[in-house]
Structures are given as structure tokens and as C-alpha cells.
Length: 365
Ligand SMILES: *Cc1c(COP(=O)(O)O)cnc(C)c1O
Image (cartoon, rainbow, N blue to C red):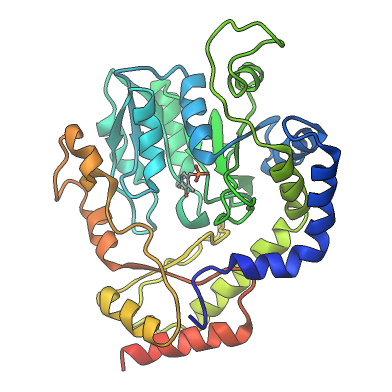
């Protein structure tokens, strides 16, 4: 591939000079679990996300599972969420025995707030919007519904670190915000990592215990917990990268601007950024009828692409017991056939972008 969809080795090459001494220092000190790096990371993240508290965890999936537990979601309860996310928004709900209730999405791939109210039942214990692609879901309406019915919001903000909606940050709208620092995310570690954000002190204290077996001190457990700690090494790496996160995102936004400006809109549907949005482009998704042919064409030209996600969650074999069928979520299903994710990462060169745009525009001639 001339231009792979993602190039993490290139990121390492560019950062090696700065990260090597940081990694070395942690390894030489010999203290790998809990430490000041983790606390520093939590402070910077809560400040970045404009929340009172943040808790560093082992993954975004863990943040979702723990977050649902903190909200008191239990076996048999229902959680409303879109069917076009990464699988773990839904699997987190099933891990605690609750039932995912899907609601279709808008053209921008985020949950359609107009369809939420009719999905609410007596058993609904949480609404989980997903801020897909780095764009915050339509939170005004979702918050209105949450207040009207007294149902808490847990945000899946795994793809949306630093994204804004009316100048407010992803992860600061709901009762709990869940983030991932997986290598593919905009703020990324060298392995699995994640965190949650909240303004609720009780949730914060409980999350600190629950991520560490439920231990309240060295030997005492009042309620069984999980094992989900961010290790010192990942925290140290993230503390370096968080300083550059604005730059990383600005570069991604510049790349997006390039696509918006030069891609031929006759053949590609692009979702424009609204005035009140500040999107961070975890992914840049176009929609087009000839998607599968286009993938092959681009591959021949050395351009890597991806599909996020080709199989809607309600149609996954694992979802069979939920009883959904083809046709239940027409927008999600239609998008699954037409969406294509272009390379957007911060280390793309101008030349890379020009090549991608030229080939895309050529395809339909
Ligand atoms: C990446 C991702 C997750 C899961 O995060 P992990 O850190 O990989 O567990 C959850 N939801 C969405 C939307 C994601 O993109």
C-alpha cells in the first residue's frame, strides 16, 4: 500500500525521539501499576473534557461496562443505543445482562433523537448515544428526553475525544462519558487503554474502587469489582500525546477540509460540519453507491480504506436472540452498504491527500 488507511509505525517513527526516554524511565523505575503518571493523566483528561473527574481504565469497553454498572443498570433492564456502532457499545450492555434496544440513525450516522421516545419502556434504564466518527450526537434533544423521563445518559465517546457541540466537550453531556485510547483512536496508547469522565463524585469514588477488584483499601472488599486499571506505561505515553492532541486534531480537520473542498459531490455524499459542531474526524466517512467496486479500484492504486461498520449490530449472529430482523433500521442498513472510510490520520502528506482525491474523482469518470 502506498497510502495505508492507518500508519502507526510512522507515528512511532515521528515520536520515537520523545517517547523512548519516557518509556525507558518508567521501565527502569520498576513501578508499573498505579502511580503518579496515572493521576496526572486523569487530571489532564478531566480538564480536557471539562468534567470534574476522570478515571483511567483498561479500555473503552471497560468504561462502558463500568459506567452502566455505576448507573445501576442490571439484568433485565433495557438500554437504548444505535445499531451502527463498534460492537462493544452493545456488547457492554449484554455483559451485565441488560438488553440493548436499538434506535436508527440520522444521515450523519448518529442516533436519531426523534425515534428515541417511542423506544422507551418501563425497563429503560439508560440512553447510550454514540458520538461516531468524531461528531457529537444531537445532545440537546437527547438531554431533553433524558430529563423528561428521568433516564440517565451514558455517552459512548470512544471516537470523540475533544469533539465539541455548542462549544461543550464530548463526555461532559451525560452522567458518564466513556472513552477509548486504543491505538486507532485520536488520543492513542500502545495497547488497550480507556477512561471514563463524570461530574458525579459518588460515581467517581465508586469507579476508583470497582476498577481495582472492589478493594476499598488493601484488604477489604465491600462489593466485588472488576480489574480494569490503566498501567503506568500507557499513562506515561498518553501524558506525552495529550499535549499534542490539539495539533493532531487540527491536522485531521485540515485533511477533512481538503476532502470537502476537492471531492466531487456529484458522486459522493459528504456530511458537512454544522455551525455548532467541532468534529475531530476519528474517521472520515463518505457514502457512495459503487462502494465495493471503489474499494477494489483504490486498492489497485495503493490506497487503503476501511468500512465502519459493514454489518449492523442488530444483524450480527450474536444479536439473534434479540429478535431483530433485516429492515428494522433502514438508515443504518442502507449506510452499511454505502459508507467508506478514507485515510485521514495526522501523518498524511499533502501529496497523499491529492493522490486520494484525484483517484476518487477519476473513478466516476
Ligand atoms: C473503539 C470503540 C469502543 C471500544 O473501545 P476499546 O478501547 O477498544 O475497548 C467502543 N465504542 C466505540 C464507538 C469505539 O469506536
